[in-house]
Amino acid sequence: MKTVITGGAGFLGCKLSEALLAQDGTSELVCVDQSKPAMPVTGVNYVQGDICEPGVLDTLIGEDTASLYHLAAVVSAQAEDDFDLGMRVNLDATHALLERCRSLPEPPRFIFASSVAAFGVAPPIVDDDTPARPLNSYGVEKVIGEYLVGEYARRGFVDGRCFRLPTIIIRPGVPNKAASSFASSILREPLLGQPTACPVAEDLAIWVQSPRKVIANLIHGHDLPADAWQDGLRVLNLPGITVTVGEMMAGLEKAGGDKGLVSWQHDAAIEAIVGSWPKGMITTRSTQLGFEADENIDAIIGVFLEDELGN
Image 1 (cartoon, one colour):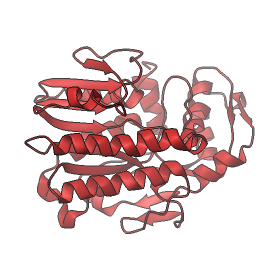
Image 2: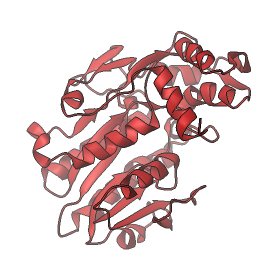
Image 3: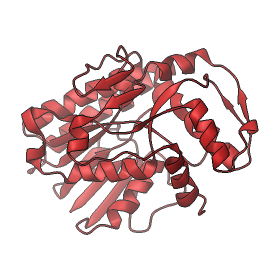
Image 4: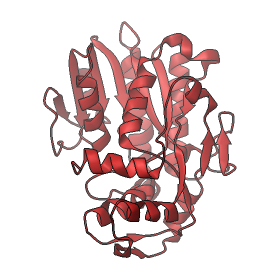
């Protein structure tokens, strides 16, 4: 079984690759990205290329492709700053991938990584029936992607499954251009003994999940039988936990980090984007289907200490 991962050289792509190769059933794993992986995963066929360019997908996705995880994206703040780039990568490339999958003799499973940014005008706590009303370009592009995947699934072109990911913490490496990047930085840097800045208030609440849980949930969602998707509903809100920035600081101290390394530098634009996202979710459908959340912020910090620092 050939599996393709877009954005496969990124942090989540590498984590997903490791997890898939540890399972039986994946005969070939191909990861495509514009950049090379910082730490290549043994057993992965890496393809460096732009999925928006004509011809790349024709060679990448062949008749032997059984599954595709679409992780590639221009992240929130970057999509807001560069409208054309966000539309090209987050929307046009998604459509091109679906069209390529449509041409295959057998419809592959198409896993689309969406986001809590799909919600904009929403109550602080949303449920499975809360409508998506995004307030920024990234959220709009993700919602359109969800609708596209659902339509291609309805027509039988793909077996589409869309998962709205919580904010993922703690990511290793350097900060990226996601509006929520600070949520990792204010924990990661102090745990490494480095200073960092927090652009939002301590009482800001965020819906979060650890990398370990999100990878397990993506694979679990892929492996669910087709009849698990009742009534044509192809979008799931993944479970997570609600944590305030202040609670993150308390967890940092408990883990031995120095919260004095965190300076407070308010950024109204960042706070407006992240503050528009849900503070929490009632995830009845995904919980019933066996998706899982982390226990608490201490457990999430523990995942970083174990998986990234070896503690």
